[in-house]
Image (cartoon, rainbow over all chains, first blue to last red; front, top):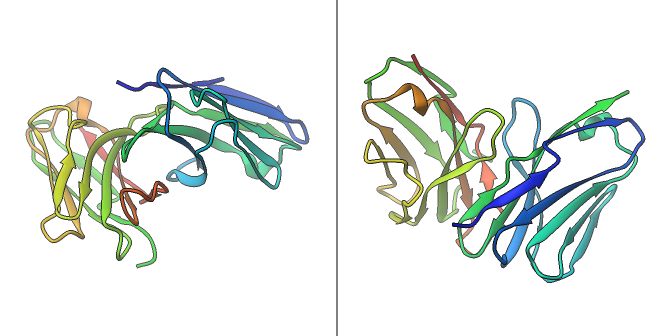
Length: 109
Length: 114
């Protein structure tokens, strides 16, 4: 079946610095979504990417879908303490989302 | 309510007991999903409902797990003869339709099997 892998598993970031987390699928995807889960919380939808090479921005967050539609990245600039949490990518070819294991982000003030 | 509601939020049970977890999706959402999340892992797909019928139950681990959605709204996940390995957070999510990919998750039901 479809597998989605994320790296790194943990990201420790100094406040104000940038970082990127990566997502790779074993198969071509029709779309990919990103979710954020705060500690003790539930996953919250951030964005969906559908087109090959698509790039979308949300304030300090930049999401990209690879040309082959098998990988994606999330880049955060000027990290803030509010960015703490686990970021999941989830790939889909139909109604079923397959989630990666997530990148857990901690921020040093 | 405004969001997906799940009850109970916490359930502690003994090995071998029967458990029911309830999900009340966002009003008007036709698609409903159950996922299971273990510590340090991403949500793992269990079952998907479109309306009243289970369109895909391929993620249910074995026949001890069963879910229903009799009126196309509230869903119940049922676990028989619970085992310690069933301990996890069970997440319910709904979406406007199967074509609307954004999932709205509930807070989850944390199940602990002693």
